[in-house]
Amino acid sequence: MKTSLKSLRVLIAAGNRDFLAVARAWLRKHAAIGEVTAVDSASKLLREVSLRDLDLVLVDAVLPEMDGFEVTRQIKGTQQIKGTQQIKGTQQIKGTQQIKGTQQVEGEAKHPLVVILVLFGSEAVRREAAAAGADACIDKSAFTREIHPILGGLLPDTDPLRPSG
Image 1 (tube, rainbow, N blue to C red):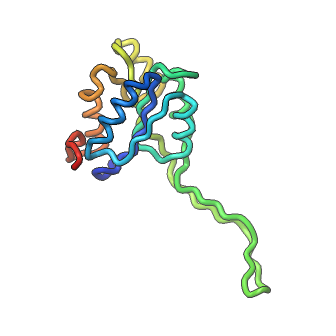
Image 2 (cartoon, rainbow, N blue to C red; image 1 turned 90 degrees about the vertical axis):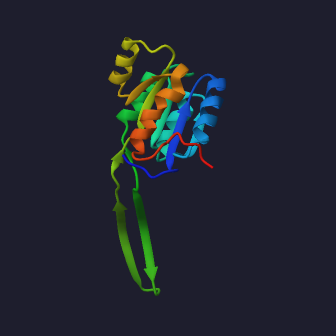
């Protein structure tokens, strides 16, 4: 998925509110990011994913209610149909003519990129993330360094870490 500069829609979920605030602030100040939403639980994350068209979901491996691996399985297992519009009903024209029926236009199925955030990610943890369907697994202690190639992959030929301004 290739996106234009300053248009990435990012959702970040973390159980640690301090990390969440720092990561959100860091993401917001860079040119590649158009929108950053932060949540602090699995249920809020799943709700946002179901309601929004996102490019990237960053999910903490440790969240209230459900771990990041299960959240990732649910995101990747549920198709989102974007651009679906359904119109049902009866329309009356000039008081005499009626048009009845259903119109449905469907878009393509789409999943956002999902990155699991871990502390001290061992090879076993990275394998677990891959098995859950994550597109990547990065260490929270190296967040700013490890997120760079992921953003770069979404926005080729740009420097996604260039500060906006």
